[in-house]
Image (tube, rainbow, N blue to C red; front, side, top):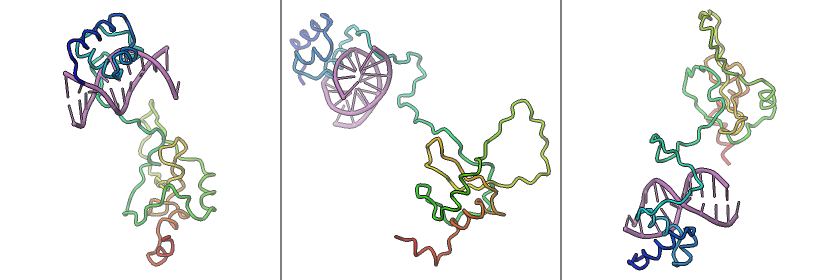
Amino acid sequence: MEWTDEIIARLRQLWDEGLSTAEIGRRLNISKNSVVGKAHRLDLPARPSPIRRDISGARPSRPAPARVTGPTLPSLAIAAEPVPVMPHVTAAPAGGASTVAAVRTAPPRPTLVASRPAAPPRAVARVPACCWPIGEPGTPSFRFCGDPAMNGKPYCQPHAEIAYVRVRDRREDVA
DNA sequence: CCCTGATTCGC
DNA sequence: GCGAATCAGG
């Protein structure tokens, strides 16, 4: 678009008359963004803006991605060995029985004790919680199974059976 | 969803 | 410099 002196003069006049940017755009047959952009570049007096932009300088040019709230890991689960098969988190685990059993178990809640760091490291063996994902990641209801994991494995027994599939058997699930 | 103005950023 | 895209409030 060619901003001739005449068009700029007309923009200035309409702007001074207090017309909305969209209205100026309509009259000049240009988009309101053109009007706003040009007015901004011409340092025309700003209109009362409906939006409030934080004037304190600490503003990231790109808003930070929304963080997902909710549980992340069930506990300090010891990943003793690499997991051969990652479960499909979106697909319901085959075998409703184990799913039902898992759902009925209360999810592990991280306990943050502010006033008592006193709890001495007990000799109590921490049983790692099963890391099998339950629900849709990113949703508030998402959690991990949390049942006691099998010895040296990140999953409880029913979930370990799903997770650790023998190579021969796996070929049959391939749709 | 309509309106508004402001800012960003690829062109 | 331009302005569409995007943002953000009414």
